[in-house]
Image 1 (cartoon, protein in one colour):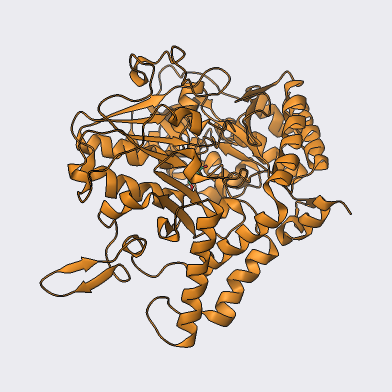
Image 2 (image 1 turned 120 degrees about the horizontal axis):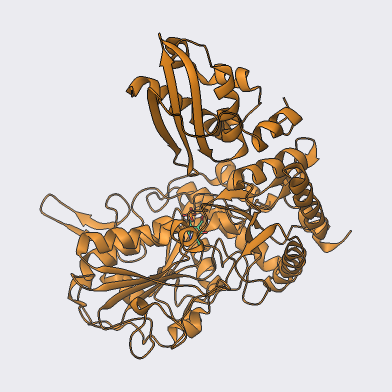
Length: 433
Length: 121
Ligand SMILES: Cc1ncc(COP(=O)(O)O)c(C=O)c1O
């Protein structure tokens, strides 16, 4: 048995059949499947340790708290944070990005300031900034892409005057926030975050002040890591950003646990986002004093079982190793890109080679509606792909298409599955002729 | 009926009653916000019965086939009958077996027709 066949056995759901055919799961960018180890961690928590955390001295409460805090340590090491206090547990990427937009953005972005984002953002790294800009009277600018699906960031290359200034930098004097994704959930492009950010000096703080008084300085950088973490080793300190957000459920962990990493100095000066239990030092009628980070940002009972599952998923990923993951995914990606390009009816959006890419491929087949493509693949071949705009309206508008079909691979997808997929596309073209 | 049967593919490639209806007594547009599919219907009603129908539909196979089949099968029905049609009636009429999200695609033309009848000219 090959290594890959062995890893496939770790995922109970991959054994399912759909319409009598073995499931071919190519919708990993939406959410990944879960290995038994993760499922066991979740059910194990409920079977053996279930208690609320940080609020009891009985054995179970201590165990639950330890499980939760150990995963925080694990995540901190995994992404190379300075300390576990920089890791805030949230539900998902969306919540993490909203937290930054509300807590940092609301008080610090002023009238006539600007927020720079990109045309390839997922709505969850676009709408919070759009709303913030509207509310505070700031401008929202989007870095464009070239025809190959890559951000236009080099001096002179960016024709969009909006997002470059005379020095060819992507930010201006009044830029308060730069929010961009590390990997596109539609194009598969991996953005050169380090290179982009090398022109952005570190965000500087006026010690002891609040975001409101952090007026003119260099912009704060927020990176959406939702589509990067499942495929690449991420080192937040090396990237040069101030915040990094990701969802557990796209990296083999349960739905319900996500992470916001932030530089501690910045987190400390931000006000809480949600108020309630678990985030206070003391409260009386006269006033309240809030807890330190990370508790300050974790109001209410968290999803402890899902966090336990996240810990198991990280362990699982470390066992497999990112090198092995990239090998599997990129060789299949290369095959898929190459073969799809041989079919004249297929248009691929995004990079045509595997350089700086994850194995997420969006395409259209002639003028066949993406819903019809997805339905046909499902009904006749048991293939799960996504059809629509994939929460990237501005990007689809930029590409000039109403929607697309997306096949997104994980390391457990096989070459055999790619071959079936290619046969299915050719069959689709025949039937819809 | 199989989604890709000859009859269905025939409606998909050659949808019936396509175009603008001159002298329509009722008109309406409808959009499926989840995928952007669009349809526009023009109807001519006489003595409370549907006499003529034309549509322009831009969408997926299910929406196009539903519009085409509906445009053939509801001619001669009373406006009351058409206004009372439900998803189940439509499914029986077009003979497709659909899952929840695709039922919405099939409903688009019916919603447009009902909107036209309710809204008047
Ligand atoms: C790039 C990107 N950002 C953000 C999200 C939002 O993730 P979630 O729905 O887990 O909050 C997604 C996933 O859909 C994504 O692909």
